[in-house]
Length: 313
Image (cartoon, rainbow, N blue to C red; front, side, top):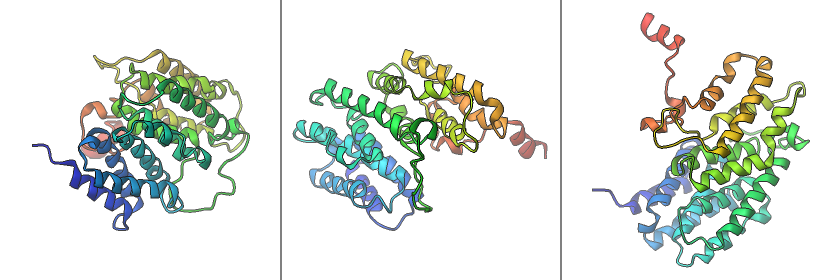
């Protein structure tokens, strides 16, 4: 028998709201809470839904200074998921633009994509909301991507030094949403997946980077872009039910060009390995297709070093 979602959701919300767990654990809690709200939100009691909404809203409005960016983005996406079960579908449209004035790409991307990914067939004026989200993605990737070569400025300049995790910019934020949520709920050929990749292609960010022949000294762009490529939700090469979409293929092409152009500039050639494995569709959809109960970065690669250390010695 499947356990009721109410006590689980209530406990996860309390953990996010309290101080009993650290930031790393809150990243996982906020992620799991988002998954449950997406799948079981309809069965959650109204009083608990309001309590969860209050906790999540406080994180993205009043507690951003003390929360790491993954918790903030996960919370914003979770609010978008929860909105699918509001009594009045019009509230989804109101929420969609409710945080635009904050100018905070972490919250805005999370809210907008959370609503578009919430699975509801009652989203009002969907084509208009999709056009708005696409326009925002293109704009924010051109002005706050976090890559100096794109933005023309370092958006991290002046940011206080702190131990709390922060995304470099909107590109890394979008990569996190794709890796964590889009990968799990939308296969390559679905309209939502194609929509996100189309927005990325229309922004022209990867095309611009792929055409750049010489980056500035000490630039962080190689690490940033390789990390983004690793986050792309691409189907396994041996998948019988999921194939690469035209939109994905167009972006993958630019990613391959970028790696080819800059391979020799890497400190270590192995730095490109995870990104290449993902582009070659050899990560089993970031291990999701393996049905493991661990995160992808916890899976040990079966490489020569591992074999030597664990078998030969």
